[in-house]
Length: 261
Image 1 (cartoon, rainbow, N blue to C red):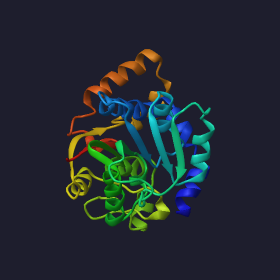
Image 2: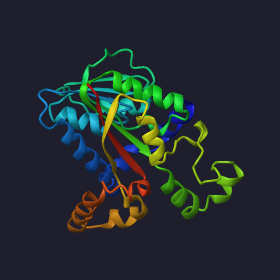
Image 3: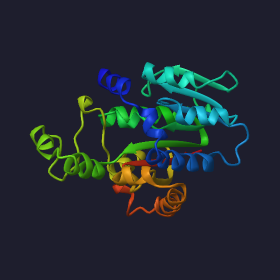
Image 4: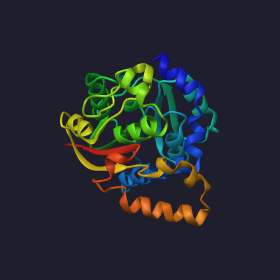
């Protein structure tokens, strides 16, 4: 876990999420969180891998009952610094691979918006997903975020001039699927990888959404937009973010699952 802690101790994750381009991912994820919560009475929400609390704190300040679990102490400290004591939130240090502190069927909505970025084996991914499903009520929702393969090749590989590094370090397969290990920090997925994981869980997929779509290809442009142009960008993004022919080109995706009864 040292690689992860070192990364988040020095990376301004909060600043990324607050940038205009970062808001696209946030606003999109919140749109689908709100859709899942719509019609629920006093739902209990769990966020596993809560980071600096962008989602957990936002939901707690809206009056929801939230439990936030975060691995990295630095992130957890930032999360707690945002609270004024009026929120109905419990924030604890913990690991996505072991949610034994919570009983089966406790939460109406479980969010796993960071852990899948940093789990490198199928066994660990399934363990985290099974734990998230276990603590969710039957009929409840599990939201899982992933980092995607093609933007990594196009942006980190080609655009940033790292193709020699990638091939010299055996970081890609013959069919151009990124290979990750802890020192690279991020684990990369394709849509078929996500579907394969889902097939081993007692869930049905509701939607697979591109949470930032084309945004990260145009970070500087998005950040320079005035409010009116940015609003139109969001209109366009929301119009296409569920199009399955575009999902794999998004930097981040959100897998929206419903636990079977």
